[in-house]
Length: 181
Image (tube, rainbow, N blue to C red; front, top):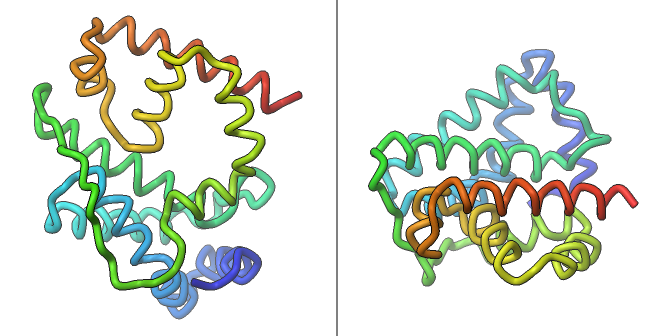
């Protein structure tokens, strides 16, 4: 995978309509993003469809990328995660994707989670997560790192959906405050 600075330089080129820049971004990131999509959806065909949607979104919204807010990998991984969860929700209210623990992608580089954690200053984030109570920590980690929908998380935690959403909302507010310090 290309380094963060190289990927960041591609974004203005993509915003200007440079197809070769989009191809280079795809070649550098598609294996990791496919892993993100597949882990959430547990369905290869759906993951491939979502991956295509992600790069269409990048093509259309490259001008909105802000290097001051996130790395390119974080930005497009967030798009992939959100699109995958949207697809999972479209399956219906009882949809649940089983976690894929033994996902093998012939890539050899660090996992998507590892890249995301490094890009977002993992030490600081994990320190702030450590300040949350165990229940809130579990809810946030499961929803955001494992890609589990709120509905599925509520079933797993045997709690009402509104309660789980409240735990996450309050926990995210505390995390934001902690990270802004």
